[in-house]
Length: 158
Image 1 (cartoon, helix red, strand yellow):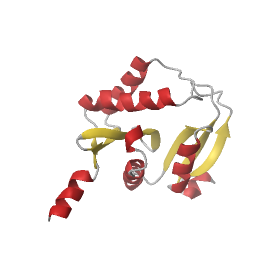
Image 2: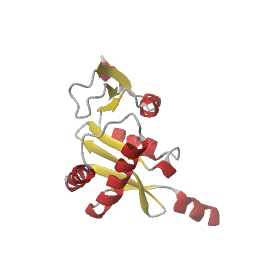
Image 3: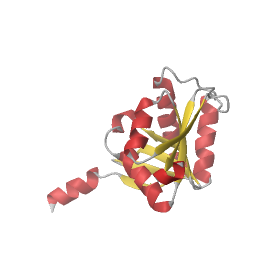
Image 4: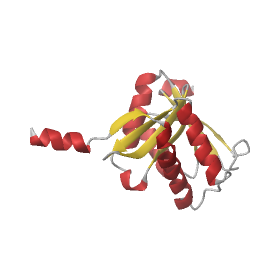
């Protein structure tokens, strides 16, 4: 019984984001931006925070909690994964995998974009069964960085 209780306390909890989660989600996003030297931010921090808050208000965001704190979040708009970010101290704990698995259970197909330079994200999505559909030179994104579109399941890439 004790072991089961200990595991239950450690297991992340996935839930729909609430408005009060906006600051924590925005901090996770901003932390990734600040730690990524190749990323040219196109928006001030307030705009990022408003974007996250708007997605939460629209019911598009799922958070993963660890120890009662938001440690990761995923925004799913229709079949489009608008963003998936994990706090640095929570990376490698399976939170991203759990959030993507939940999205897969809710949709028959998913698509997303990530930057070509984001090798860690590309490896993650490929491990999770996403396949590359196309690449662009970045002309059409705010940051002007080359990106990659991924889709799941694989037959959607054809």
